[in-house]
Image 1: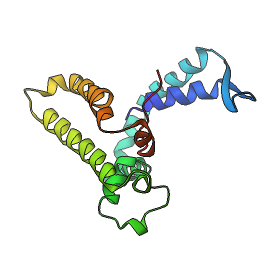
Image 2: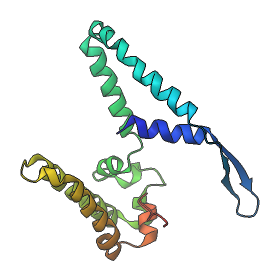
Image 3: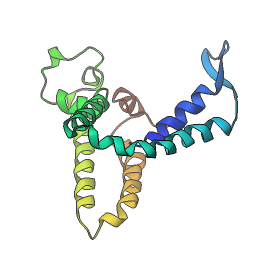
Image 4: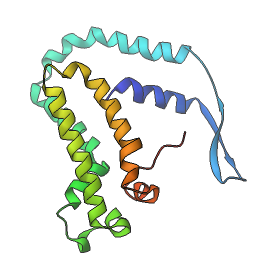
Length: 170
């Protein structure tokens, strides 16, 4: 996760004016105020935090560990992959009504989750091998090909939507 990406997107969102389109019933971007000054000031303030690095030695390591543990746990909530791993062994009657198992069945959900898990394990092993790890960005491209070319042979678009992974519109 990269903080600069989130920060930049939030900055653009804060500089955006939106309006509700009555015809399409969707909120649309009507204007974006462009300024370089606010981005410069934000990054200048980030650069000034280098002066505070000396204070970090006074903060105990368990505090940092707890902070990163909290942030990691917070990032996991809402992750559909982790939810589907948990639902793999859950009783159907204990699942919420909007669970994809009710829409497309346990077999399809577990098949999709199994494919994702095998891709994750494959990427992890690929990254761990020193001889192949330099090609890791190319391997991510292979994952994109798997999603766009291989998985549509096994899943319909409605199933992708139910799984929380709709095909992006181009």
